[in-house]
Amino acid sequence: MTGYSTNRLTMDYTALFQNIIEKRSFLCVGLDSEIEKIPAFLHKEKDPIFEFNKRIIDATNEYTVAYKPNVAFYECHGAKGWVSLEATVKYIKENYPSIFVIADAKRGDIGNTSKMYAKAFLENMPFDAITVAPYMGEDSVTPFLSYNDKWVVLLALTSNKGADNFQYHNEDGIKLFERVLSVSQKWGTINNMMYVVGATRAEMLKSIRKLVPEHFLLVPGIGAQGGSLAEVAKYGLNKKCGLLVNSSRGIIFADSTQNFAKVAGEKAKEMQVEMEKYLAQNKLI
Image 1 (cartoon, rainbow, N blue to C red):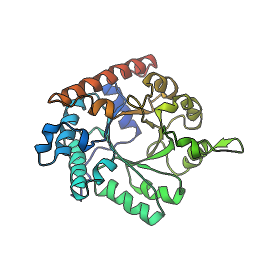
Image 2: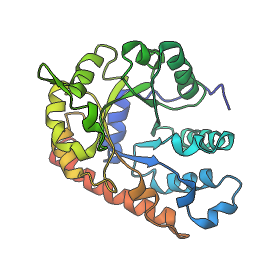
Image 3: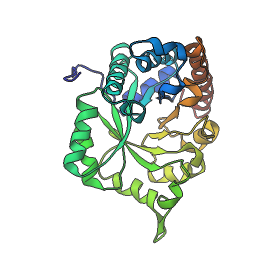
Image 4: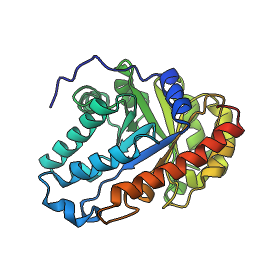
């Protein structure tokens, strides 16, 4: 499934913001579609993961501006997992083309290897963006930035416990994640680079916004991981919203019965309604 048409919507900063305003939402739904957790009745389908994703997408698209398949939950199944992933992205782009789609792949390697990773996700599949690990520096990231109208989502400050091992390392008064934010801005622009900032570190968003006032931030950790949407909105919203807040398990696995898609839609709507409130409070709508 390669050679996708280039006749596609341009998903730049302005288009992303416009979609946020139209939907009154900055919700990103994470498609972490773990086979053991999808409803049992779907296992009889030819491609259970794609069928699960399809129903979730149809039920939630009205309330979300982005989807984020976590590649690990697909590639663990080998070739058939890649088929499910490609079918999912193609389905979104053919049926809901204005929705931003992020490959949560966290790639990052020496330049020629990164070039092949970029080709896999940004050329051979119609993703709009890919998450990238910055540890190996500029030449490991720039291959992903060579594609017009595509985005790099750079890991900056994550929400896991182990983030304390390195990301808060302080040298000369500068934490490692702050250096990532400062230096990487020279590699891209607000139109092709955003940053991952975990919701469980919401209090750090205030200082992060001083370093990257205009960039979009992808914020995971809402819901099952304990992050507060109110706190994220308080510290992270900017004059163009500047946030994509992700929820995965709290939406897609909210129910395991025949009604799972309907319940997922209800959970997504709940988040959209709360987000609409924060957008209004900040005079963005």
